[in-house]
Amino acid sequence: MVEKSRIDFKKTMNSPIFRIGILMLVVVILGALLMPGKFLTAGNFTSIAKQLSEYGILALAVFICMLSGGIDLSVVYIANLCGIIMGTMLSKTIGNSDFNGSTALMIGVFTVFVLIIGCACGALNGILIGKLRVPAMLATLGSGQLILGISTVITNGQAITGVPTAFTKLAGIKIWIFPLNFLVFILCTFVMYIIISKTSFGLRTLLIGSNSKAAFFSGVRNNRDLTKVYAISGLLAAISGIISTMRMSSAKPDYGTSYIMFSILICVFGGTDPNGGKGNVLGIALATIVLQMVATLMNMFQNLSTFYRDIVWGALLLTMLILNYILDNRHVTKR
Image (tube, rainbow, N blue to C red):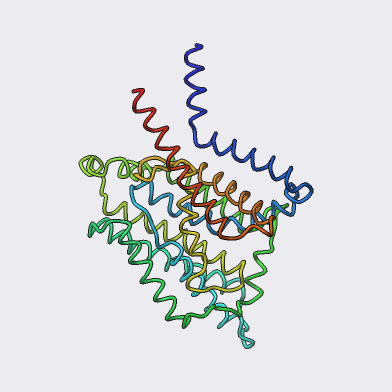
């Protein structure tokens, strides 16, 4: 009994969720000590919830691709393209002074249309990777540049503005201290949990990430499932793009390019194995919240240069990779 309790304790200590929880506690304590009366406030936590949603959903998109043994470097560009299309359609219809139709209906129709575009972009990646055997990094890097080029041509390299207030005011909707976009992030997290943990598709995705050849000989149609994986990634990217346009009241081709590194950092920090086959949706959600708390705390120091913040994110990513490597190899050695 004592030995079993010891083993359970070691598993808890090695769990990414436990490490994230400890870091969250440390950040809260530091925030309370360094910024008393500013960090631990309802307004600050509302701000944190509002800002994390966009790249949190992008992290979920990268997460499902990592589970399958790949990666999606095009998610930010898919999000930007979808945001640009959404903003353009809204400004030319609802934003037109002659518009007499239903605002809610038009927003709903355009949202569905943009989500379909996101799925199509993601499915293209899936076909390149699953059917044509193009390495995921090269396929998504190439498609990302293609999508960036399309976005630049559509906008002539300029930001899309003039998004109707009927759409942007949705970003101000709150339930208690939680803004609408944060609730969308929570919903996406829950749906991803169901897909990965409770469906045969989720099991096949994990199997493909663990050993694609074994998955193939077990009867898994790798091509079809990889297309679904990247289509889901594109769908999540489209949701992120819609939220971004809603919150920023604008969209542009190169917005949020640093979110790619942020998304990868969240996945690694949340316990996702970059080689595939291992990950936890809850870890992604908690890692997103913790990293936004860290970013918010750093933003409170106005004299802290953005360059130093980039050093912090890079150092965190390398630290988590090294830590995961050490823990994984320690477990292998013990076996």
